Amino acid sequence: MSDEGQASGFIRPFVITGGRTEVNRADLHLDTLVSALPGRSAAHRGFEHRAVLQHCVEPLSIAEIATLLDLPVGVVTVVVDDLLDDNVLLIHRSSSSAVSLSVLERLVEGVRAL
Image 1 (tube, rainbow, N blue to C red):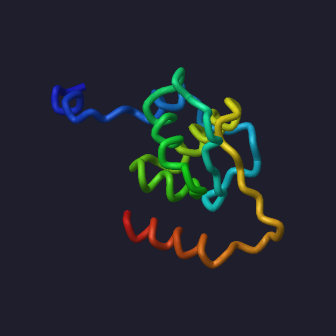
Image 2: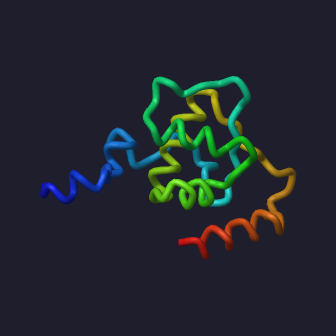
Image 3: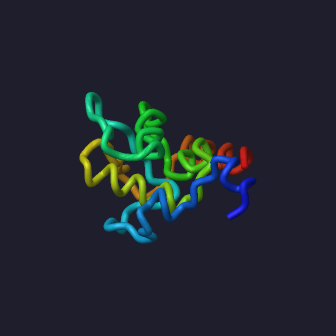
C-alpha cells in the first residue's frame, strides 16, 4: 500500500465488518428504520458502530445511515446487525407493507446527496 493510501485515513470495509459480508436477519433492507435505545452504549465496538448510534437518535433508514457516514450500504447493514445483536438498536416495523411517503422522501434526499 502506498503512503498516500495510508495518509488518507481510508479503512477497508472488511476491517469494519470483521470480514463479514452477510447478516443474520432477513429483514434488514435499504428502507429499514432503526433507532438507538436510550442509555445503551457500544463502547466496545469500533468508531463506525458508535457513529451509527450517535446518528440514530431519531429513526433513520439504513440507506440514510450509509449516506451520512459515507460507507457502503453492505457495511452499514453488517454494522446495524452487530448493534441489533448488542441490543442497542431498535428496528421500527411498520404495521403495513407500504413504505410511507416520508421514508421515500428521505431516501430520495439521501440518493441526491451521493
